[in-house]
Image (cartoon, rainbow, N blue to C red):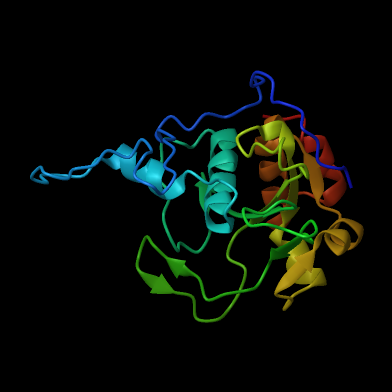
Length: 233
């Protein structure tokens, strides 16, 4: 593991994503930040941008990091014009492909004595279908593809969740999870890589990798052919 350094960040590289819909104000909790006070005035309405900045400024929290990972994958798939649906049976849909996005990180928002062990939730569940407001009759993994997103930076002074170069992506057909770990609830990074052999890819390769994994999941092509499919767009 790397030791923390005092190196200052340089200018953001081209690999950095920007969240245009979130104005990332800082507020220090003392009333001296950029969160405007309405004291002495009549409240007529709240500012959505200010709320988003107040609520979601810390991208390292587990819940916010998970939503960010979904956003990164959605952006790679070119489906950011759609809106995120909370609690749907899978996180993203591209065409007829359901995608489940899981995230993990070594560095957390709280003070740590050591880096976090990496594990992902793969628990089968009775998924809720937002399109018709129904639950599945039995617990299962509803998506066609799982994308495991790992924020790899281990230096708190250098970590930047908006820099896609700091993320690793592992893409796996759901059929492989069902075949090898059908009822398992979580999986650590080591066994995931050693036993299930997900395809590691860059941000730019995500779309092709997801489509190839979906084809494997539906029995259209084998795992070997899926590797060749990565060259397709």
